[in-house]
Length: 263
Image (tube, rainbow, N blue to C red; front, top):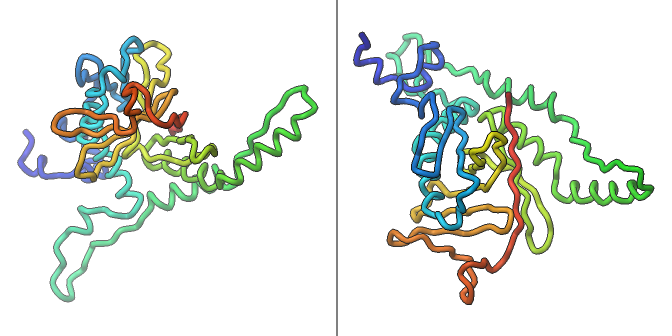
């Protein structure tokens, strides 16, 4: 029979001791139906019907965010705390009386492992080239390399890989800024990639949100455009919609999310 102390433990206690997590401390071990459209599997991956149009069901965006913020983001925070050396169950212990041994010692092995592995994996910049029988490949590759350098791609790819080491997944976000294509790494703590529920699981759309914002805001990322959403008085509004045609956003960004996961 489990004692009361079992329920006072944090996830860190269970992970360090090897004790199975209590059911209430994690999202589940099977497929969960958040609503009639949204499904999340036991890998914390959101699935959505390919036949449903997310733009006609914007409430689903916030349903996904609410579930992610309540159940998934805390697990990413735990992993981030480990990387940062914030072992709260050790640091939070009461200070020992004078001249007594104080065992509140943290050896930040997770950070050492992640940084060392990431250095071996992505220490040398990734080489991206176009290859074909075309004699103009060198000209094209020079343009590709110039674009990569303009985007500090070595640092972006290194951060992308490091986040995948810490969280198990990370995202590469490509977007237009004043007509220039740019890339950056996005954390799964505030970025979600949603796939269709077919056997292929193709990416359908992405979501980015501000977890600490006072107002519920989100960015819905689709192949056509980014839709800036805000929930006001129970109603969801597309804030970057064209006033003459609410179905069209003012600026199509053509953003794209790419997934990076560790195995």
